Image 1: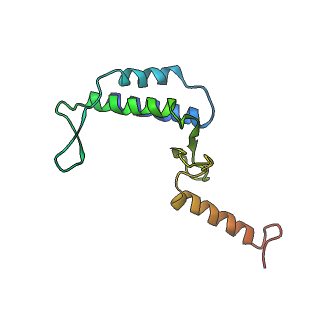
Image 2: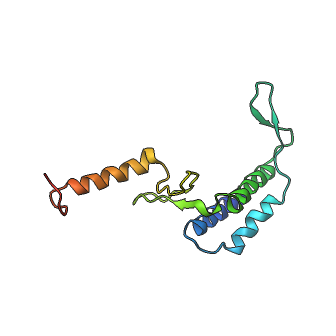
Image 3: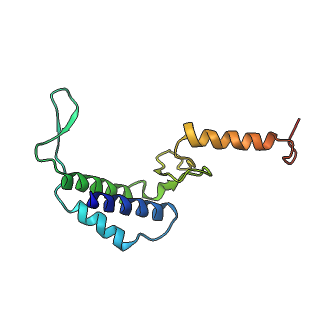
Length: 133
């Protein structure tokens, strides 16, 4: 569990560095790279057509698989699209895979909608500049 927490924390901090345009901390990179260097889980197709894991799955292999996926994200096509949600009360990090690459919220259905409603109400309030009916 300690290694899982260490990897989780390193991944979060690297994603935050990326989202805010900062340099990636070498200590956090070392944690991810060490986990990724271990043998990963081996996937297989189960008889019902779903994905499963070959025998020998361990916690170390799981962490290696997660770390390997993180390496793909931090070095891949969307590496420069790791963002922090723009909602005033949300700090979730997400990868913007939208075609234009201008997504501002972790979820339009939740944070985006709330922020748009908040802005609309602010424009319509009697105290807003040029607002009211």
